[in-house]
Structure formats: C-alpha cells, structure tokens
Length: 316
Image (tube, rainbow, N blue to C red; front, side, top):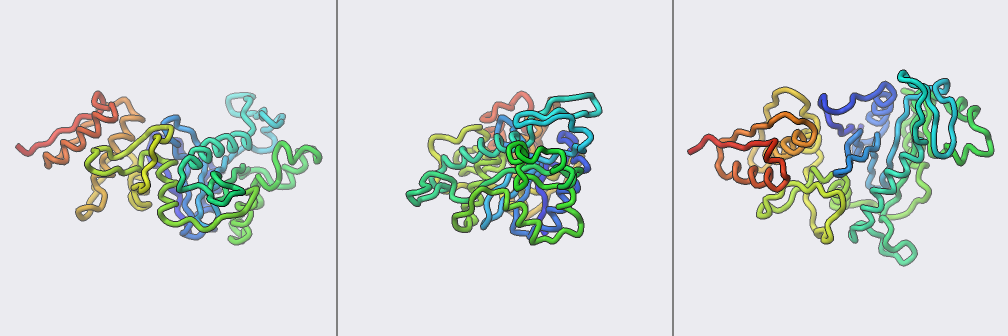
C-alpha cells in the first residue's frame, strides 16, 4: 500500500469526490515502493498536476483528474472543452493538453541534470526513465466516453490509452491490471531501475522547498524556478517521512519531537517558508538556542521574508 503525500491545511483546496476516489484506489492498489503526490505546487511558478506518481522501475507519470459527468461536457476538441459547471458554461483547456504541458515543462527541467540523462548514443541527453501523462474521469465510464467521441478522432482528442475511466478504478479492480493500465500511458519503455539517490534527485528538482544544502551556506531550501547553472553532484532533500510530516501539519498547534538530527529544524524552516508564501499574517518564531536563531534569521533574510517572519530567542 502506498501513501499520498499532500499539503493538509485550509490554505489548499480539498480533494473533490472524484480525486478522493482515485486517491483511495492508488493507496489500496499500489505497493509501498510507489511515491504519489497530490496537488503539490511545482517550483515558484506554482504549476500543478493533480497527481504525480513515481516508481523506481517504471518512471514518472503526471495525471489530471476531472470530476465532470458526460452530461456536463457540451463540446470538446483538441484544445478546449465546454463544460457546464455550477457557475455556468465554461471553456476549459483539454485536460490531456493540460497534463501534457505540465509534464513536458518538468521533464525538460529534469533532463538538464546530467545525472538524470541517458548515456547511450541513441537517446543521449533524454531522461533516463520513461515518463507519461494522462487524464482520469471518475464519473464517466469507458463506454460513455467511447460513444461521445467520433471513432476516427478519439485518438486525437482523448486517446484511450491516456485516459482512465470510472469502471476501470472500481474497488474490485485487480491491482496488477490497474498498475499496468497506468503504465500503458507511457509511449515507450526503456531504462534501468532508478536508484535511491536518483529518486532523491527527482524530488530535489520537482519540489525545491524540501531541498537541504550544506549548513555552512545557511540556505536550507532553494526555490528557484529554473535550476542553477551548477547542479550539485550530491543533493540533499528531506526524506519521505520528513516531507510527509512537513506537508501534513495542517492548521492549529502541533508538537514535533525527535532526537538530535531527526529533522525538527527542517520542519520549522519549511513551515516558515510555506506560511510566508501562502498567508499575509505575521509569523513569529521563538527559540531558546541562540545559534539556531541566527541560522533561522539568515535563512529568513536570504528568502526575503523578513517583513513576514520574525525570529527571536529568549536565552541571554
């Protein structure tokens, strides 16, 4: 069983019914070597993919989930959909195009890292593992979708292999079949299994807020939208447990405890940066240790959030 990593607080949108149903299928039908993220902003431009799925031996997949029913869709073409929503008739981007654009943007970014490039001559410079994109329709069956599309253009607007429908994600769906259905969204299959350091490099590029740099730089995270001209040979990121904890704190009071070196300061710094970007309320950080206060102040100054975050210590 895998676990969905998501931001769990009032500043982020709640899952729709269809997203919750799909997340439930992912958690129950995927093994624990899968990594899945829901609605995590990517980089400073805050691009979103509803779900990102990463598997060491399969690759990376970007998915959009649309709760539309077939009755809501009034017209569709390669570029746009006309959808009747509670607020009226709206023109929306073709969700497949939306998913593809998000995927390509970040695949191109990953391909700039020499350690994530293929070495063989035929595909040299390309990403070392497969990648794909697709759309999930939790409220539309495969038959309904097929009947709505003209047979000779369905592979242009919504190719079957790039869509997952309501009747293909039931509680009774076979786990192996479901996983294969996801990986059929790839246009190619090649490459060797990703190592743990390579998986961490994927996370380092996709989610700058979980980066950890050497202490001497006093820069706990980098949030540049574009990778720097020098990508380090060794990258450090929060481990999965630390990332899950940081993103799941939610609102209200929390007590974080752990042994020295377990990542408590990382969680605190992440929270400062996150709150400074997502709220206009003033933020106060109180700590006993003078050294910690200096490091946090340097971090706050470097990120230009001094006007929002104030760090004080009470040991004199």
